[in-house]
Image (cartoon, rainbow, N blue to C red):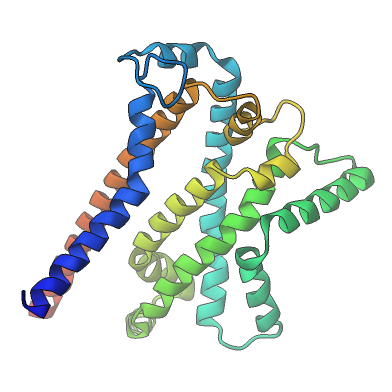
Length: 279
């Protein structure tokens, strides 16, 4: 066998093994969500009773709804703050405190979540004692997730801003556009794909976060990961597989839809650029 053929087949085999390693547990989870047996790893027949049990599980439903609300607000807030931070770091090379600002933006990426959660808890408790708010609950969880999500969003958007051609923005300003018009009409459309990617990333990070939620949650504000984590101590039943399957399906549909929209927008942009070059 030629070396090129060996390398090609070895690469394909290694890639297939990696995909199996990553996605086989998810497939097994989906399959066993339809298992009639209460024992998670013993197949006894097809059933939908765990989905019916999930429909009656108010604690899990409330936790899922709270997690979705927090994840949505976290993704939106993280994209806004992360874009502003990335724009400042890329467009303004020199300003007082730039090194400190860059370090503070990236600190949550390398700092253990236990340290971040404990620090936020101590700060929020001190603020609550001094001002009487905020109470530990949905708001405090959102603040913790926003801190973490903003760092990830800033990295994603910053990498896209660094690849932009500055001549496009300069041309817009030469044609009379003001800085805020350049941002809204030129820069923002060109980084739209990175904004969608940052939104999906921060939504996922917030949805499955356990550590920060455990530190910052209060009575009546238990997210879905905390519900699952608390039940895991007593032994999980397949209804957890059912809610995980629903989340996998929703996330998969969202990713496919976002990928399709991004690809269509990219094709449209390429066609407009080709038309402009021909003109």
